[in-house]
Image (cartoon, rainbow, N blue to C red):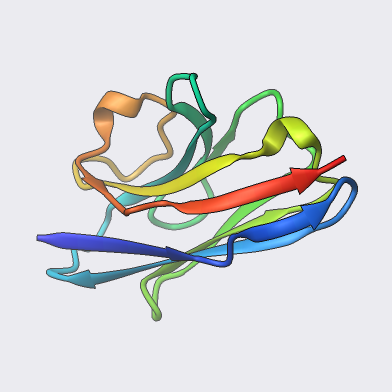
Length: 125
């Protein structure tokens, strides 16, 4: 069992920045991809960004491309999401997830089999 644990959420003004972290504990797989998703009140959970095992494969939702950057540290089993130029519409609970079946980054939510509890990000206008 892999348990992702998110941290780094909070309240920020529009135009500000936050960095989310996701550390995995428990059984650690080698060669797995990881992703970030978010869910705003009353909306479905949506893809934000993903990164493959080596870090060379990344994918972003169109709404965050150019503002968010996903990266990882395989030694620390940690994935990061650097969020810049935040907008009120970025307000959501952000979830980290593990895709234990693929090396490459995937935007398909159904590919992810281990999920964290989420961290709240609130962007004030």
